[in-house]
Image 1 (cartoon, helix red, strand yellow):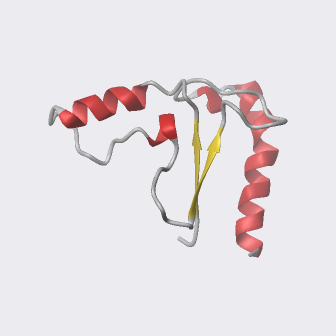
Image 2 (tube, helix red, strand yellow):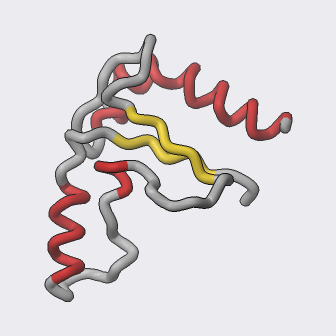
Length: 89
C-alpha cells in the first residue's frame, strides 16, 4: 500500500486499555493506541486526522463514533476525498 490514513480521536479510550493490556502481556503488541493518539511515527506515507478537531466535520469521540449513522454520512465526503487524492497522486 502506498499510503495509510489514520483517523483518531482523544475519546477512543479502548485503545488506551489495549496499551495497558499489552504492557501486562495480556494481548499482542499489535494493539496500540493509534485510535486515541494518531500515528506518531516518521513514515511519510502515513497521515493522521484528529476526528475530534477537524474543521467542518462533526467531532468524534469514542472507538466506534464514526460508525454512527449521522456521523458516517457527515464524514464520508471527507474520507472519499482523501482516498481520491491518494489514488490520483
